[in-house]
Length: 120
Image 1 (cartoon, rainbow, N blue to C red):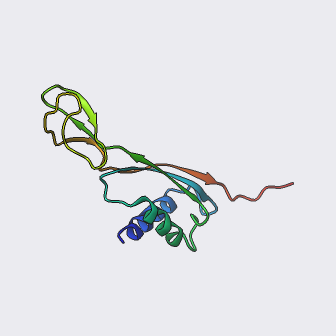
Image 2 (cartoon, helix red, strand yellow):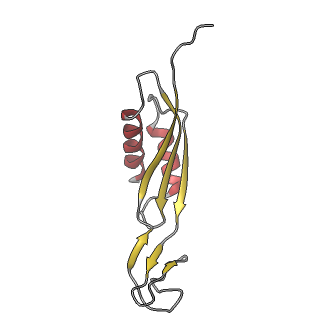
């Protein structure tokens, strides 16, 4: 399950980017392509394990799954592939392997709670 190592890397990256030592992450937004090799449910499970004893513990992991999109050299159009993906242009039927989207994993944003004490 390589999702655990991915989850640990996400937690490490988030902690490195928190504004100060009192800040905590509350929500993390990711974009993951359907051909990235990452299983969404396994990543969500692993994320809960990876956040233990960190400033990311309790944060929500929001994942947007991106479809597989290819570009056709013949008709110069993009096509979204179905499941299972058949690497053929949906417009002209030409075989194509020009992947435009679908293999990425991107940390988009982090919502942060500042842990500074306030005076009443």
